[in-house]
View 1 (cartoon, one colour):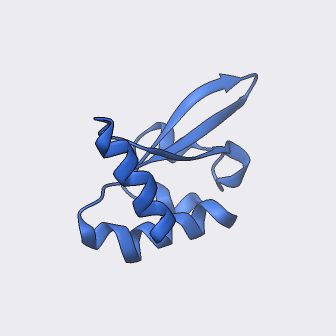
View 2 (tube, one colour):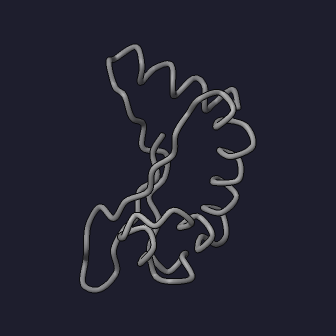
View 3 (cartoon, rainbow, N blue to C red):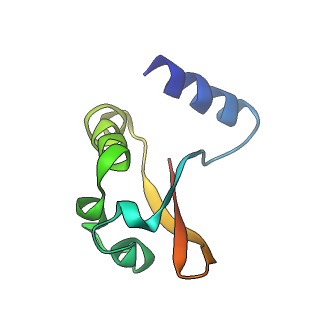
Length: 87
């Protein structure tokens, strides 16, 4: 939690309103990133492994502090989009 808050404070001090915290391949989603690409409300349920744990950390510790979480497809390389999570 201390590391996350340090990163958030640095971003805020430099005028940023978002902080990219993760970038993962779409194969860590049960639907290969479809729900995230389509901005579906329950897209977090498709996450697996560490991205799932990171989302749970946000839900349990950061969301109550007012932080949002957003996932989006950043790029396509062949048929494998890279997915970003930021808050």
